[in-house]
Length: 569
Image (cartoon, rainbow, N blue to C red; front, side):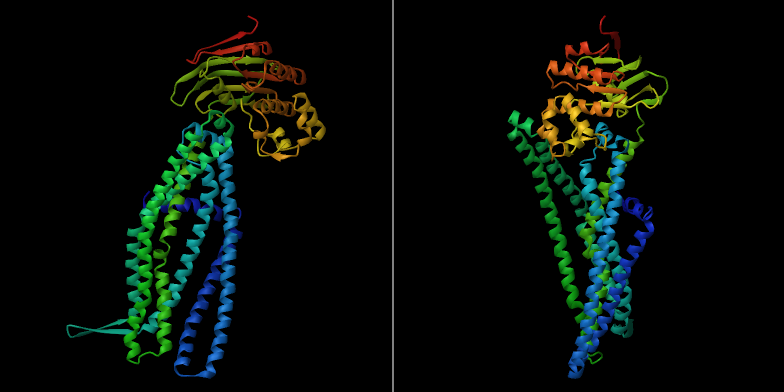
């Protein structure tokens, strides 16, 4: 990414909040923060003048001026402390508001239209979207404000102290070849030259930090994600006895973290050598430059100290990018990661839904349905069928023939397909995967998922009893990791309870009874038929016992062909 591309990417991320519905409050608060920083610069200028008065009083043994000047310093210092504290406090307030807006925008975009799912289906190389939203956004906001406000403050400092330094440094006369050359404001020009060379050298020394910071965040996130995977699948790993394999994986990922960090350390060491040497040299330079005038009697001790102080302020302002290069490198890496994440989400959003859904007729009808894999291999071709209200269809076929992918297509989350799905107006669909998802929180919340409303205790007790989970009635409001507490069979029965609560017009079961014994499986299907007789059921499964619970069979061959027949044939 070139310099122009990097700035454009930064601007695309930066401008959103400041042009949002909160723009006037946001701009006003930021302007106030910047104003506080400007006032802080004014106090520093006033303090610079104090140096002249104070040290001249010391040189001239004016004891009567000592305490009044100490009192003046105390007043300026106290006011400066208050301004500095509130400048940081209010900047953090801007940071919170900006981060909140940007996080909500990214979360909405990531969740809308199943973008989070499409990124996985399309084999996107976006790694760790959770880190992009939680950490990178926070870093982007923090570093952007830090650099922006710091730059404006240093620019104001340069303007204010540049004038002071120009006036204090006077003229420098050189004799070259018998010709007298006078340089006005020579200390200002030297400071400008010194910082310009310093900034260019800092870029040459530290530019590798951008790529290293980018890789460090990625390797850290991969290492952390691997540990999360072990926690989420602890039981399966324990059954396999896969500790050694997992430990090997940890070491491989952690080795990348350490290897990249060593490179980061070495490059940072080189930059720190340069930055600290540059800063220390800047301490003695103004004394050397002002010494001839001082010893010649051109300026008093107060003037010398004021000149040194002004030179230091100008030097700090001009050296801002030298001192902040590591921060700039971090921001550049964050911008690169967020931009890549944004581009991948845009790519996922641009993919049109594989099936056109429309509300017409009284039946569930599929017309000219085609289902493919990402490599364009056709699993199902030219499938047309109609299912009356209350129909029960069993989808069968060998593993890998596209049964689950067919349900994904009907749900509208699989982009590699086409066709038309017609439904009665207002029809509600519910899809149950083989492993139900249980959100963090109470059992009541897990039971009502994906809904957010909570029913009465009486209603909850009834549905739990009907699916054989009455022992959990007293724990409805208990907050825990229910995916760990409930067995897979209990989780699947809880999913059937969700069907009773949601009362959809059509339910799609993707091997949703695989962990249940055959009598319990029959009991669940019969319960649906009794409680929701008008609800249509489409099931995917391998068990022969499922044929007794359905009216028709759709057998997929996996090569595009298919057969629809009645179960009793």
